[in-house]
Length: 329
Image 1 (cartoon, rainbow, N blue to C red):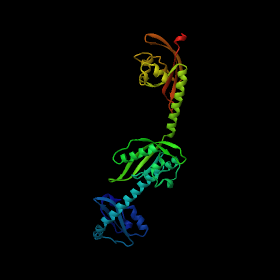
Image 2 (cartoon, one colour):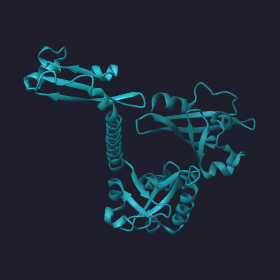
Image 3 (spheres, rainbow, N blue to C red):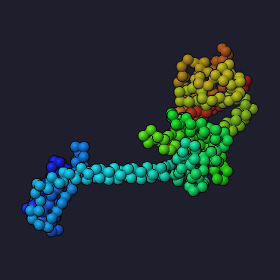
């Protein structure tokens, strides 16, 4: 340690009287004298080499002449050993991260030939490593997605390719919807492989499709009973409206992103007794009758406001069903 700190050699010709704790250890092992010499490369001390002898007074400063000749070569060997160890550690770490990544990952060449895949890819697509390696990624894509990935591979050579939705065909012939990112991995200026990162969003897309169908069903039901249906965000802006409301309202499709209070109540500011405000605050369904002025005429409405929750149970939107009950008044 002293040699590494100072960069200077140390001779101990009697380890029984040495000042370092290692001298006592060496003496107990029968090493009576020792020489420690620094290994220096490019002005930096990389380590030290120690020579031991079973006789007293075995070393003197004349030994330095020979050691200064061979020490640089030994320092180079030591540096290469350290670098190799670091590279190996880095490769093992990357391999572990690659194999155990939560998302599906694949290495391909510039032509789309599969070089390797991680375990998550095997799980999702249903094929084993040996069934995928040396095949082309296009073999597992729908026709439109083949064209898309060809374009992305070409694009990723020179710039960042955008995240893109593609369709992957699994071993059981199921169509999986995935988000794909492709980046070029380089060594110096040469591309060594393309890294494809897949995120399976099939469940999310199916849920979106199911929600769309349910909205359409709800839209039809609500239209039949003569009611308006809309989704309101926390900023009180309309995020969605049913066909009946869009067709009958003067703003038409432009009703989206307008505030609910200026669209229905003709107010410039959010009213204190706003039904949707209560739902955001209480997280409970609210039903009320409201009187609004429409073209200077009184209009009575039955308003049912229901909370829409996120996964954490927070109210993120409100669904309002508005029915005109003026004739009943």
